[in-house]
Image 1 (cartoon, rainbow, N blue to C red):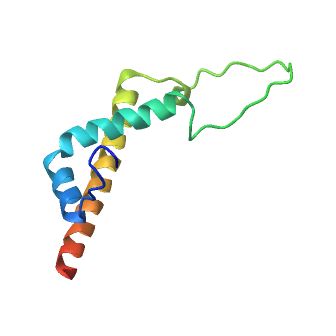
Image 2: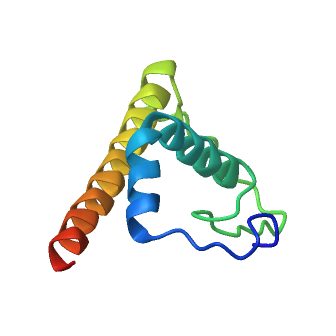
Length: 98
């Protein structure tokens, strides 16, 4: 806030920024989510092993192919797009109130 000397953007300014920069924001959101997942900041579970022996399982569900990863990235991009659409709808609703 000190950089802009206390100026506060209105919701319209923020909405216009999101609209003008949606591609870059989508990429930034995607990269941020992938980083969080890579750093195990969310979506993981803690697993402890007590020295027991386990049989290996090479099922199709456990193998990550390039196609499977592409599908996961597509699903992630779809979620980000849905989120941006919801924000746009809310911006439109806010505009009608003023």
